[in-house]
Length: 103
Image 1 (spheres, helix red, strand yellow):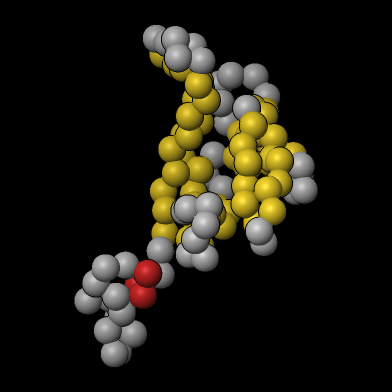
Image 2 (cartoon, helix red, strand yellow):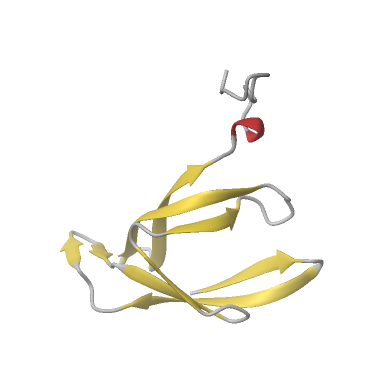
């Protein structure tokens, strides 16, 4: 699987590989424990790991992502991930109130 990331006005090629043997299967889905990013960065991200993620390619907004599930669908031949995203209160529609608490 390959992904293109836009960073500082140029396109970088990032390769994404599944790491290790499958850890489970259910119907057409095969589950894995980790993925490896290669390119300008070389990093392994496992289920439960936290990392910075840019939600949109052209956005300055960065949040924290937690990898929750990683699987392939053999029917559609796609690799899919489930992330939990964490945002700062000021990056939500309600915003942060004057005492620093979420509205």
